[in-house]
Length: 396
Image (cartoon, rainbow, N blue to C red; front, side, top):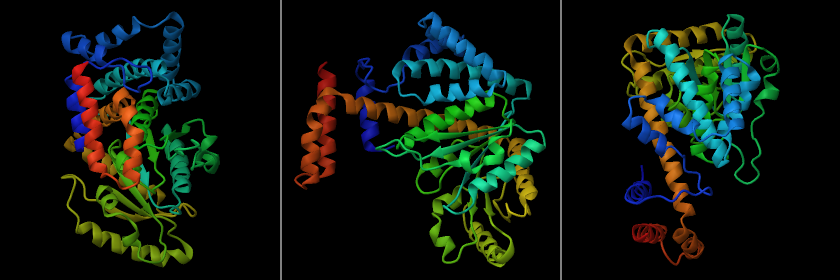
């Protein structure tokens, strides 16, 4: 966490924050205090929120929850739309719904011996790696074996227009018609924090709706891969057997996060280069530090066109899941991810409060202009804004 975030948290924790509908702070303070003071935990926290709900709001949440755990796709879609909203009141309703779904999921895990009931897999790779085709082929195989599959495509929406860059639902035509599959883009709204909030919460809702395999796809052109790697059980890197310096074109950090590397399009004329890329990545992975005591990352080949290697890829994923569950690492990874999720939301909310603070809003245009003209350094401008924020907060 950077100096800006730490300073903001320090200043905010020392003052009483004004409740403002213009700020996107999560309204969870009362719930948190309630859950600390009483042993009722989540039930007490949720009940305090429910007391503030109107009749129509209560009926809406009941309808969504009952439909969700009943496996109704329409209720799942409507619930995800609710958690994606930026409307302050609807965000409060979404948190109440999420708490109920989390409690329901914990009951399921308790009946499952404390083990997760769903398997989360993140998929990433450069453009042209054939991610959507791969997901459709794997998805049809899984639904054919009796699994319920949810596909969440992290959609890097435009910061200016909100437009989508991915059209996975139109590309996965067969899978989108499968009643045991659910495909949904998870828009980022141009911010990395948006990836963490909306995608994490969409995963929870999909699991509550009974989907036992959740695939999270990223477009593979930015930092969203790292965010997604912190919210899944297994991170899979898909790479095409293209010419050129393949290893130079993939960020080292992404390779280090990969639990499995799949060389796609391994058929026909591309079979020989696919084998070469497989050998190169196998050698490269041996040089990286191991992230798990129970699993060594593997490199495999697969062809979505001929279906060759697809069952083997899923078998590798199952082997990973079984090994990580047996060692307890998967459960530990999920616990750590919840903490990462919490801090990312704190940073997002703190930054929003900072930007909406009157003293900062007044000083920001002038300081931005001076920074762009090179009259003052960005570091000095940041310090001046923090000083303006802290001075007015401490005096109020």
